[in-house]
Amino acid sequence: MKKQLLCIVSLLCVALLHAQTAYKPTAANLKNREWFENARFGMFIHWGPFSIPGSGEWVMNERNITVANYTRLEKFFNPIDFDAAQWVSLAKNAGMKYITLITRHHDGFSMWDTQYSDFDIMHTPYKKDIVKMIADECHKQGIKLFFYYSLLDWRRDDYSWWTGRTGQGTGRTVKGNWNDYIQFMKNQLTELLTNYGEISGIWFDGYWDQTAPEGAADRTPRIDWHLDEIYTLIHQLQPQCLIGNNHHLTPLPGEDFQMFEQDLPGENKGGLNFQKPSDLPLESCVTMNNSWGFNITDTSYKSPKQLIDLLAKAAGYGANLLLNIGPMPNGEIQPEFVERLRWMGNWMNTYGESIYNTKGGYMRPQDWGCITQTDNKMFVHLLQPNRDSISLTNFPAKKIGKVYLLKNKNAVPAKLNGSTLLLTNLPAITDEEPDTVVVIEFN
Image (cartoon, rainbow, N blue to C red; front, top):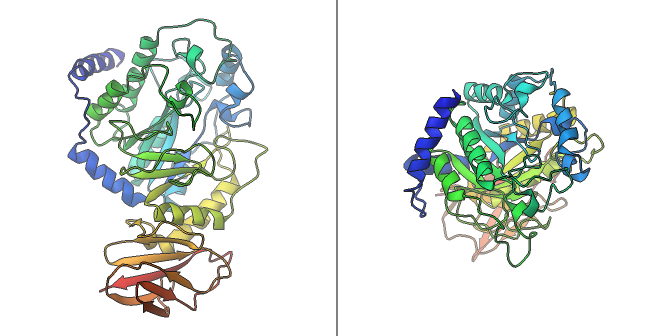
């Protein structure tokens, strides 16, 4: 298998020498982008040996754990309660259309049977390929699969740690060959895109480690990431595979979607996302509490109301919501996550029409809520409590047909004055009904 993969990589590297810098997505890629924009809701899974200390996925960097000491976690990672079918079913029943799985985070641990590292799932007591189990179950249940892959590595000597912003306290002294690291990533990505069936996207992270902090005037990377080679490799292995990079910059050539971390597109409330939304498909990745990886002290769980607001407003911006879970090291998903996901699934059974297959509204989300729309329907999401009416200014010049509540089809009083549409007698926002959705049909 290793020789076969090396052959594949060698042939593709030759092809890369002739690759054009100007990226032209294939028909399969464009079709997958269209699916992605219609999906609107996905699950992010942060899980690995970093879950064991119960202090989030950045524990190695934050506690300055040396490579030698951190590697010992490999011997403790034995998720005997992990059930791929349950995880995928939970996502599916929540109304999620895809899963983005951590395959390798900044700690360098590979969650699959890789031939290019000994720090992987097969060297744990568990000795089972997590990526394969999730991939097989996603394919079985009809859920699309994305792979998160870290460009940054706090463990390897050949990663340019001496120019990076993080990972300075892990005890490394050897400055390895950067080109070896690039080849290592190509080898691993080839495995992931060769051995696990159809993969809908690669979700990169860590590019920012080699740039000035977010908001700086110049964020030119201090090293050559060889992105043109890496992106071309991915698109040649699986042309439909979408590429996104969480660099917090304007999308680079070869990228197929744009993500925003802990924020809705263009809002930048968290101070990470100074980039403007592009014309590519958009995604907001958000935690359900304040942590990505398992954090035993973090009980700041978002309420169902907060989660529905995020989902609706993301769709109002024309973006997907990628909602994160950080399972426990034994493979069990915390009941707080499960309860909220089941709640959202029930909500989507009633209101999914206003989220799936919609575009962002003709106006950006407002304090009162947001709008999603299709060619012949507009969905007004009233999210602000204690408000029984709403005025929609600059309303499109279309002939209005029926106006009603999505939940029960009850008519809603609507009056058009010039270019302002007034909707009145709207029901109150409650814990059980956190989003009043009004449907406006056009003739």
